[in-house]
Image (cartoon, rainbow, N blue to C red; front, side, top):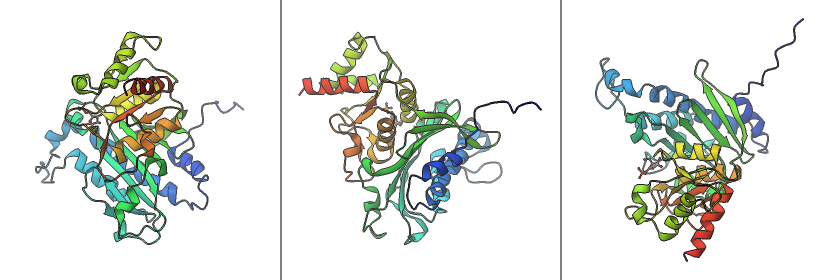
Length: 338
Ligand code: P6P
């Protein structure tokens, strides 16, 4: 009898979550059920993102299409899929989205709800029209002790260090889900023929040093001096080699490359965004959680991103996130420019 061919085990994200869930004492499957709401929604999102070029033909952009259906912008659609799928999870009490000014109460408030989920349903959506990668980011927080559903903002205005899980899905040449529950970072590639996320990047570790820096150089004349000193040191080979520049303009894609290849991604304070452009709760916090889990670091320029106590849901922050070597050099440049 021939042996079964020894191929790598096929592990789906559901199997992986069930394994990870054992780290949460008393979690009776509710956590894995919660995460399955996110994976389901992102499968629905990616099916639309993959057809974006056909939207005008098929009519899905706010007008009425040939079937008489109301068209929807992709970010509105993405938001509705996440709200719909997560609202079916009794363990969730509060949702906060980049698309909604205020937090949403799920089931009008289930008293046994234990979690809040914060997300950007389609980050970088302006890139869709030019077929550039976009992404969904998410952050999962436990209900603060004593927090009631009368005060949903309190559920989400927690520092990133309180995240119990975070991740993103990048809709690129393939669709990849990357997440962590605090036990390393793991990546899953969607097999579209069966609609399953399959483990493709177990235990992702950010290389100690990379070869790319990623920033929008168009604004560099308004960056604080420390940032320009830093970028000049990267260009000049001060860290052992000259860096190349890679900037996609979609945070999830720029961070995904940084996680895989090392280097640094930064969105400094600028004249038009002196407090930074990226949002703390659902852009900076998830990537900071993953970066720190993968051996990297994430700062707002001086403080760890994960230490920042949010004042408002949509508050912005500068972000510098990357490998150990590049982040140590950045901190030296900040000190030298004090
Ligand atoms: P800029 C996309 O609009 C986004 O929010 C992030 O995904 C991205 O990193 C950033 O803005 C790009 O901003 O000013 O470089 O176009």
